[in-house]
Image (cartoon, rainbow, N blue to C red; front, side, top):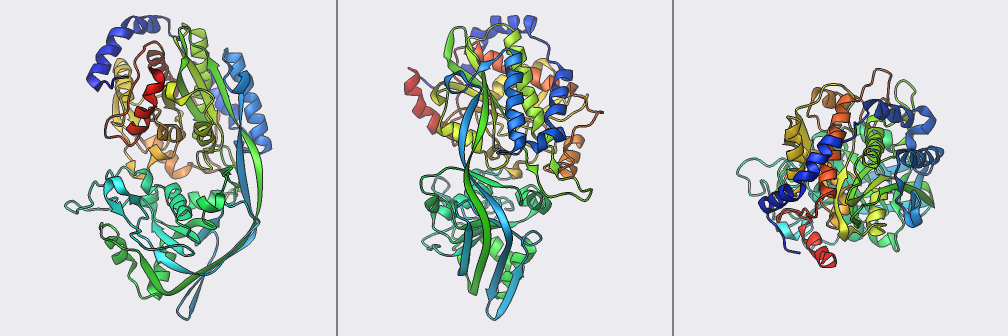
Length: 550
């Protein structure tokens, strides 16, 4: 299929969907803010126990969602017409205390799990022991040949503990530095994500990896990590986990990392600055080793994606997908008030409520020409596991999935923000579809105001994007774009205080859902295939899938 320019796509879009748009505007079903609010109330209630994967909360959640999709008029979208896709997962859980010690020269530094360091393992074993492993500082830990960047050079880190900076090499670059904008400036790339750094450490055979935490670079405070650290850790089942995962992985407070560097006679701040240079080489901390010992319970478990579908009337084998994760953190570390249920109301009961409302809208409105799939994912908070599993085991072919519209966190309230934050704005042509519809609401698209948090690489559209599926991620809940968003990020994000209460109204969120309904309707009723922009990192994967659509 010939690649069209954005202008050509828009011209074809306008020509082929004008009538469909008029029909949609005339007959578009009303989006019910009250029904959405009730769905959030139910999902975020203590009865659902924070919707942790592989828990009693999951059983209640997925059963309730399947029934709600059925009642809305959507059929099962999973294998053999089921509402469920089983995702095979590896689970590890803390079992007893952890001992973490750094020895530098004759000095021994004990690191307390929780306040100082967080350690866990994705290897499916019951005990992790690393003894006197050399410590190596690897800068930002990025190996990005397409950006002419290699932090590892030819240094062998097998059997060593690597310390790595959070975010990208250009995150704190000043104007005029050669590295400036080499990794998209303030917009974090995948290389800046802790998930990439963990994966790279495993691939290189490291004994362990600790990301040095700084709030600005991570996008969240230490408490966010610490509060969720006791929750079970999940990974997809891997053929050879030892080849892909280091024995241990985790985070260390910057102040503790600095203490280790000082004891080794090194200046952390100077080394951090040097890591912004392309000629940076890993630094072995002299006479420094780290030992780590902890127990865990390892087993294999099953969780479920919930999938529903409205079949297309003319091209049912072509799919427009909406996705939102149903999971939260379940029952975890109590807060100061003693509350240990992470109800996950905004993140992401609101997104799942949006999917249910979209199912009502498409079932009640004109039959879409392409099929609509609603994917409620498991395991997002544990590392995008449900969507990763689906990307590896798609029920509906990814090469004929037209687009994936991600819904992750809608804020309660009645005031419609005139600005619509688009995570990953400028990466593909779906922005133009959204902009056309936003204009009808008198609204404007803006880029992520907190690009350093790397939100594009932290939500469930990402595993499918890696396979080439164009993604659209309009967001409200964690961007800091409004006072309500800033308050949520500072006081409730990933906390037990992310709760529904009786003052909630979802009028503004309903307007957002009406908007993405219109975008999905436009995509479903045209024969245009939106593309990634040529400089997007996912364009090549989409290009490879075109032959199967001819």
